Image (tube, rainbow, N blue to C red):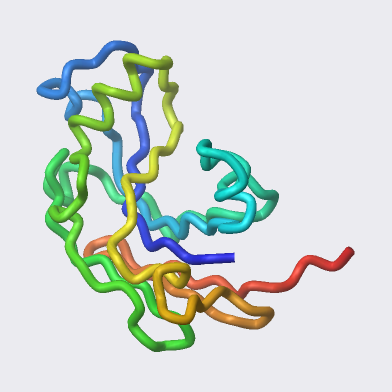
Length: 162
């Protein structure tokens, strides 16, 4: 299990084929996400889906803050990820590879988004799999995703009992 501190956005109304310049009409707000990834399953095929959809993974929160309070569709917020209090990820949301308007335009070309649908925007450097040696989440580890203006999402990870 690996961590990924991410900004997530929430759709506020149905969206289909939305041009990037109109994205602000559809984004309701933002929250913090930990895109927990099972790297061994993620790497089994060229498609990452199997590593991203496990039960009880990808926590969100602690709140959803309206987009207008955080800079509309171009938020420039500090984003940090901490493992047991040690900073592993430290960046700003304006460093995302794809901005919110581009994500809205692309995703709504492929599918219709509904109110409450959530999209994760990508993670800064500092994930455990990229370390030498790699460092993965262990039973009892606490990972915290903190985003300026949203707050901190803290989760304790537990090994799945079989």
